[in-house]
Amino acid sequence: MKKLGLLGMAMITGVVLVACSEGSSGGEGGEETTVGISMPTQSSERWIADGDNMVSYFEDLGYKAELQYAEDVVENQISQIENMITVGVDALVIAAVDGEALTSVLESANAEGIPVISYDRLIMNSEHVDYYATFDNFEVGVLQGQYIIDQLDLENEEGPFNIELFAGSPDDNNAHFFFNGAMSVLQPYLDEGKLVVGSGQTDFNQISILRWDGATAQSRMDNLLSSNYGGGEELDAVLAPADLLSIGVLASLKSVGYTAEDMPIITGQDADVPSVNAIVAGEQAMTVFKDTRVLAEKAVEMTESVLNDEEPEVNDTETYDNNVKVVPSFLETPVVVDVDNYEELLIDSGYYTEDQLN
Image 1 (cartoon, helix red, strand yellow):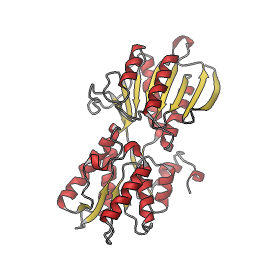
Image 2: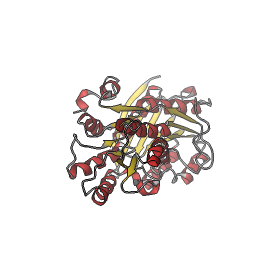
Image 3: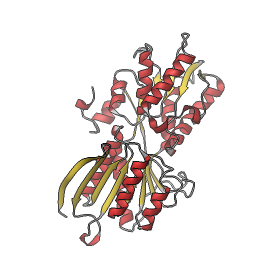
Image 4: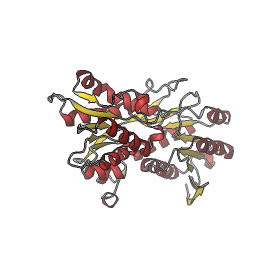
């Protein structure tokens, strides 16, 4: 199978990146097969890596891949997917900006016989989601909560310790899994009084951050500090479900004088470079690493199976109900990264080079 090189990368309306590679594609009889890849944003390094990895894997298999980023604008993503359907892609891999906003466009995809793989963020309220590739999202939250428990030694210490809680975007189904996972291990200590939420804000709707916006997280942390910790009260931990929020939380804490020596235990997710550097500097405590290479490869494998009229490998057929159907899923395993193991997991594995980290 002879492959041609990357056709090019272009910015559309200043916000949308399209990567398109042409070549003899996968599929039988040498027919060209195109896969549309719709990613939510380039504001997080992990989504850039997800997209690039998938394009590379699809190319290696001989497919043509079209990659577009919506920059967290729902209308952009819908328009991009509509265009992919119009030009006749053979399959779609979609990481949704808003998991509840794609029902109509998936109807159009289904009318054209285009299978859909939901990627990392479950697409809700549609029967036209064929498979789902993600990490064990409940376990992500468990890892974050358990890290706080271990670092504060809540099994042995009496406390009380002050904690503030953050949750992800309410339109991202994963955000609920992260929060529920964390609370499954933190709630007993809250009930016991070893952990105290100074603000009293523990409900998901009170603590969620729309679109995972770091500036919004920083502003909320500013308000929490001024309202609840202005009299010398010590903040011991912050449950932040993702690095995009962790960085905002850190900026807020630094602005009122917190340093690496007295920084609360701050969690995160995605192993973004700024957060890994913050971990090395002793500011952020941990992040949950989800190897985008592994997930991208799994999504490509699932897509190829569907295109070849085969059943993709799945390991969960019960958990991910999108309100219309339980979507057959493959869950990859997340792992904790902190100052003790970041070199082994992130550098030695080739995920980052030493030059990428300070």
